[in-house]
Amino acid sequence: MIETSSFQIDGFECFKPEIAILTNITPDHLDRYEYQLDNYILSKMNLFKMMTPRDKAIFYAEDSLSRRGLELKPQKATSFWISLIGPQSAGGFSDLTSLDFAVGGKNINIPVSVLPIQGKHNILNALFAGTAAILAGVEENQLMAGFKTFKNAPHRMELIRTVDGVDFVNDSKGTNVESTFYALGSYDRPMIWIAGGVDKGNDYSILVPLVDKGKVKTLICLGKDNEKLKKAFGGIISDIRETQSIAQAVSWGLESGKSGEVVLLSPACASFDLFKNYEDRGEQFRQAVLELNGKQHA
Image (tube, rainbow, N blue to C red; front, side, top):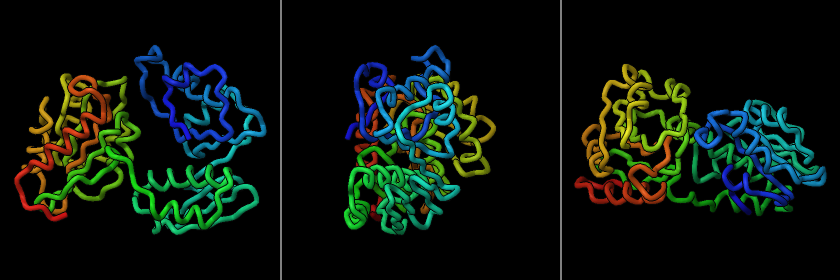
């Protein structure tokens, strides 16, 4: 199994997967693609260029940019689709209570409640992974066991600690707007959001419904140049602060947060202005949270 970026796909010459997944396409790295979204989409679609009808490609039915990619560059592999809107004749569907797969003549239903990590984006990931696993020959009991025992990787919606009733969540891997969209949408509690870094041509407008009306009470901009973030959310989020110190950001999070609320690091940006990479950013966040003075409840 290989997870690959558009940067790596650009260098592929004869890479030919038997099963390939395109989870979605979101405007990202546009600075690398002459700020032309279609150029970025075409880069992503090159994942499928060597595949044949005997190979399998899995797409998200509700992602308009994936469909745009198929229009720009049709692929030859047999397509499977996952959806949160309606059942698929070949692929996976969830109504957010069960995972329903129709793959290779098999119909498999698994309760969402067995997943150790919740949220709509994790259900989508489970649909992709389950569809690919069934295509690879995994049996239903094996799939169920895999879902039950799954452990999320560090820096991906990772609860670090609860201090005085405030949850501190590390989503440093959220380096683009789409990832942060799913992170913000995972909570129905008030949030203190830590964001910022190296902007890659981001359009923050899709985040507005997730942060307005007090859903995000404080935005802490963590970066060297925060003007775009401040412009995007000024007048929407009442309390906007700036710092280049992650320890200061974490301290402000505890200061602003009340019991039952969430301090979420989900930057929507690359990390290279202040950190080595997103892992370094996440580890520094973890350390700052662990050093907080306060009663630990979890």
